[in-house]
Length: 303
Image 1 (spheres, helix red, strand yellow):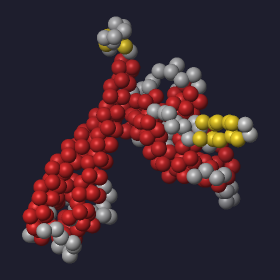
Image 2 (cartoon, helix red, strand yellow):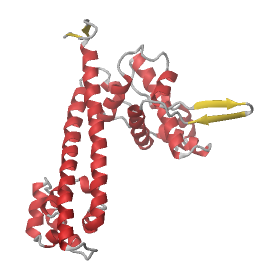
Image 3 (tube, one colour):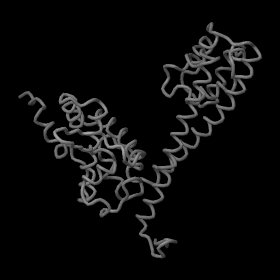
Image 4 (tube, helix red, strand yellow):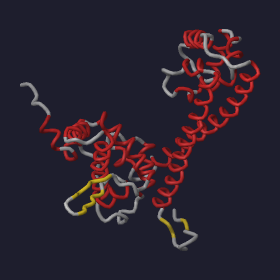
């Protein structure tokens, strides 16, 4: 199906139109994630002033106070005085409302005890006022969490329909969401970047070398596509665990004197160069081709 570009008045191929839609959704989802982080930080900072027991109750939980049960519980008990009056059955109802199915009894007991633990308290009226403020901040966090989840689903569904999705997700550390972000920022125009070096510079993965007299400095590139650089950080971080070759590459950079961020950025550049080649040639990622040095470092199998 062809659509007309309102500016150029020429038809757009269906794949290009899809890539543009993915870019809109992926960028909106990333904005929602950033908004969720900002809302989380504001609420957490506020709770620390008058409700530290609530933060302690979810300190070890993945996602912390962004978890659905944490947000529903805070809405039911926005201050320590309200939390102290919650019965075990009420906490169980809160967990079920948040969607929790397993282990509700044990978790409800743990939360009830955690919220009743002694803690520093504000004056009663001040505490109530801070609780009202927490509910306002909670509304912002709820909206950001909902937007991030909804846009993630839409972005991944659109990305999975793109012809390049299989090649992109064949790379270690690249799932549908991160892959959608990478596609959104690199595009599907093969002629956009003349070579992999241009793409790496665009992503901030290529260093900048500056020389003055006898002094030469290799610096981190600051002028870059910030969205692609953010996606690359997540990509390289996940690839270290998912790929033996990526892990070996990162470790060798560390042994050569790179700090963590520099080694991870170098790995991102290596993976980005491989992605550029694979998209040009239409082939999936191959561990042995991408990291041949890592295979030589592996011990020989026992006979």
